[in-house]
Length: 269
View 1: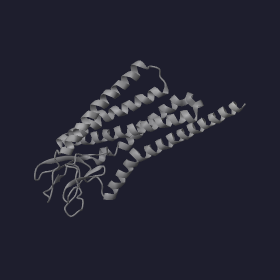
View 2: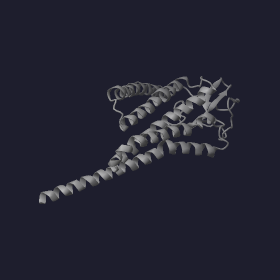
View 3: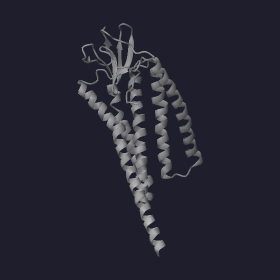
View 4: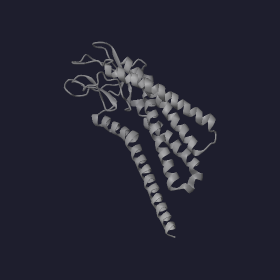
């Protein structure tokens, strides 16, 4: 899910003059192909070829799938949290990692999923400007925290396999990495409080949306923000995890070959 996904009608490419969704942001484009600048809570004037999004079949399917995922995610994560909290009270360094991962997943479950489902149903934004900014901020915090905590787990597994003698310091290191992960999640999501706002249109009908329209002075700045978010949210965590688990596989393979070699030598003796 993108950092600022919005409901987008039938999911088709937007024609000229249509409010469209590009990458992470919601934008309105004129029939001449140029984006019109807007500020917070500015009313759209009557424009040609403006088409309002609808609660399409694709949106209905998306809402149904989101509801199923919401129920399953809430049940499984709450069950995991209860099990870790009450059945396994030994405070190992793995326990704190799992608790933080469950917390991040529950944040996605109770912020991102309901927001996406309700927004697809209502099409418009009815919660006001303050809620627009706060919910878009929390949405990105949830996604960042889930990605970063997963990275912390991969770094912990990397250290456990490649440096097993350092297990004594694992708890302290994990707490430090988790603090960095949550702090980065909050900091990197902070721009959402400023780039998102409510925009409205009075013709042909009154229509309000939570969008980034008018927040960027130039299109390349919007593209840069989207690419930065993509790299921090998906690309960088993926590269770190591939590196960690790649080295783990190499180390395990090396130790297995070494063990096989020693076994053959003992057989000869």
